Length: 119
Ligand SMILES: [Zn+2]
Image 1 (cartoon, protein in one colour):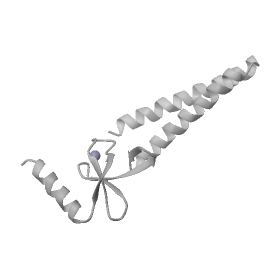
Image 2: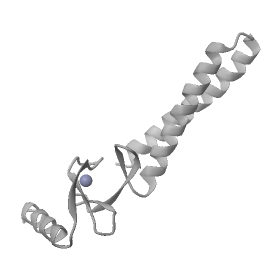
Image 3: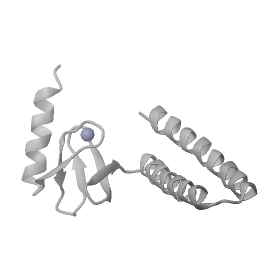
Image 4: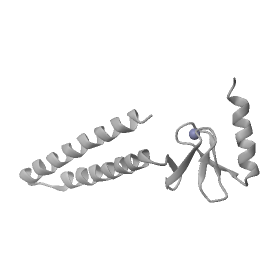
């Protein structure tokens, strides 16, 4: 049994329900996303709800979005620490900041491992 024709049927039924095709694409399979009458985004291929985390970017709902947010937060903090370290002249403070930075980088690699294993 081929899944292709079923996908098409699902697509047709989505459109019948009033869903509209958007210019956004699924973060997982790159299929175009549909906007349901309820306003939610839907990937017809993954059969999953997709949420927009920030303008222009999409992420799957449920756990991966939490991890994605965490990854972004860590990246932001790492950037902040990096600029703090570059402005700091006290070696002791640089050392302290460096320790925090190392901790952040470890967390980041953990989050990235989790994001990978979630696939
Ligand atoms: Zn998809």
